[in-house]
Image (tube, rainbow, N blue to C red; front, side):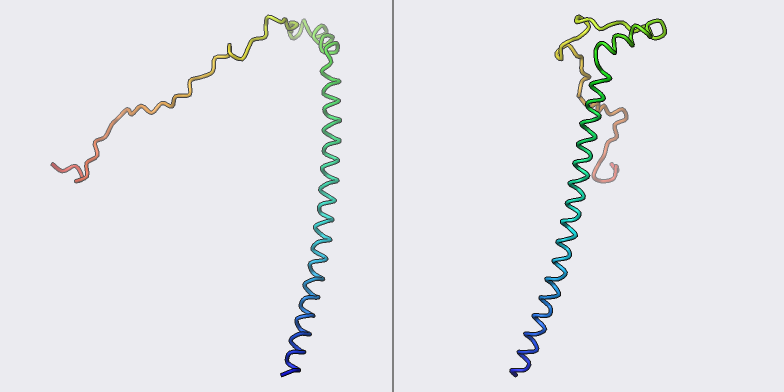
Amino acid sequence: MRSFVHVLTALAVIGLAFWAYRENYRTQEALARADTLQSDIATARQRLRMLNAEWAYLNRPDRLAALVEMNYDRLGLMPLQPHQFGRIDQVAYPQTKPDFTITNPVDVMSDGGRP
């Protein structure tokens, strides 16, 4: 009986060692994936900052005014005036009432329509 307990204990230790080995490599793989994701996020944030800077550079008022002047004959663009802007309460939004009008009503009776 004592040898059976020793064998069972040895198998349990081997099983736990195998489990710990696998968990160690799974953890290392998850950490590597997390590092890769963090690197991708940093790259995406850097690209977003660069795109925002380019957008701000391209939307400079003096540059846009020069483009309007250059293309006035072809596009007919006019500079914006303060009176052309409105308030949000001046916007006419569509009505949100759903239209559930029944055009051909049908009578439904429980006895199949027999008198």
